[in-house]
Amino acid sequence: MKYAVEIKKLKKNYQNFNLKIDNLNIPSGVVVGLIGENGAGKTTLIKLLLNAINKNDGEIKIFDKDLKHNEIQVKEDIGVVLDNSFFPETLNAKNIDTIMKDIYKRWDSKLFYKYLNDFKIKDNQILKAMSKGMRKKVEIATALSHHPKLLILDEATSGLDPIVRNEILDLFFNFIEDEEHTIILSTHITSDLEHIADYIVFIDKGEVVLEKQRDEIIDNYGILKCDTDQFNKIDKLDIVSFKKNKYNYEILIDDKEKCQKKYKDFIIDKITLEDLMLLIIKGGK
Amino acid sequence: MKMIISNSSSVPIYEQIKKSIIEQIVSDELKEDEAIPSIRNLAQDIKISVMTIKKAYDELEQEGYIISRQGKGTFVARKNTSLVKEKAQKDIEEYIVKIINIANKFEIPKEDIINIFNLFYGSDEK
Image (cartoon, rainbow over all chains, first blue to last red; front, side):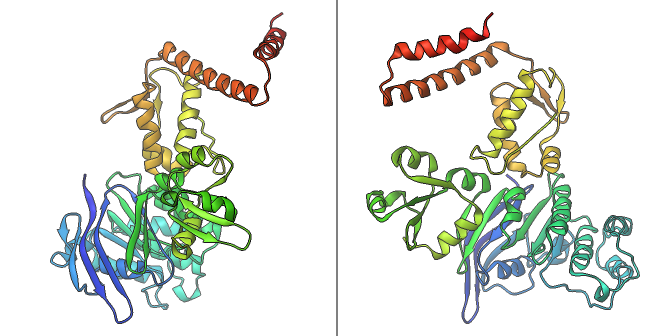
C-alpha cells in the first residue's frame, strides 16, 4: 500500500502538553478525519505535518520523503487551509494570485480564477470586506490551485453555515475523485465527517486512542442503554467505556452484533462519531 | 442507475448500496454489460465516502453481480438467474424462520400458520 503520510515515534513536548504518536500511517487516496476535543493535539499534529513547529523526536514522511530534509519539494504537493487565515486582510484575490505564482511552481492562475468564478468572488475585493464563508472559500481555492496531492485542513468548515459547508464538502469530494489524492481534515463538527471520511483518527490528550475505518466504527460500535440491575449483569469485557447518568447507563460497545445476541432485552442504539467522542473522553471503564 | 440511501436506517450504508444495485440488476433496470459509475464518481455523486462504496462494489463483484475491468470501468456481469433465485430462496427461508419463532413464542400451532399462509397465497390466485 502507498502511504501519503507515515509517522513513527513522533514526540512533541510542551510545558503542559505532550503529543506522542508511535505509529500512524495514512494511505494515499483516502479521506482521514482527525477528531478530538479542543486541546487534544489535532492542531499540534497538523503543524508538525507542515513542519511549522519542530518535533522533539521521531520521523514524519510525506509521500515517502522525509519532511525535514525535503520540505520545499514536499510542500509543492500539499494544500493547506488552517483555522485562522494566514493572509493579511488588506489583500484581494488578485494579490494572492500574484504572490502564489512566485511561491508554487505549479500554481495555476486559470484554475484559481475558475474557483473564484464558481464561488462568485470578485478578484478586487479585499479579504477584510468578505464574509467568513467567502474568506474560507478564497483560502480553499488557494490551497487547491497549485495541484496538490495532499490536502490538509484544520477546522476548515467550522464556523460556517450548512450551505457553505456543503459547497466546500462538494469541493473535497471533487478533489478525491483522483485516486492519488488524500485529505486529512481535523474538525469537531463530526457530522461533516460522517459522509466523507474513510478513516477516523481519534486523538485524546496527545495520543491516538482510536484509529479505524469509519464504516467499521459506525457498523460495529453501538450504545447500549440499561438500568443499574441490567448493568451489573453485563460482561465487563464487552464494555469499551460507560457513562452513568441519573436514570440509566450508557455503555459503549464495539461488537453490536454479538451484544444484540447476548443481551436480548437491551436497547442498542446506532452510534455517531459525536457519541463515540463523548463516551471515550467522558466515560469510565 | 438510481440510488436512494437512508442515513437513519440501521442497515449499513454499504449494504443499502449493494441492495439497491442488486435490485436494479434483478429488475433489469441495469442491463447486462452496462457500465456503472466508478467508485469515486459514485462517491462524489451520492456524497458517501470512497471506502464505503468500495466495500459495496467489492462484495458485489465477489458475489458475481458486477465485473471491474482494469482501466475500463465497472460493468454489470452476465446475469446468472440461478444466483438471483438462490438469494431469493435464502431470503424466504429467513422470513420463515422468523415466522416459526413468533409462532413458537405464542404457541400457535403449525396448522394455523399453514392455514394463514394458504389464505394469503390463495387470495392472489384466481
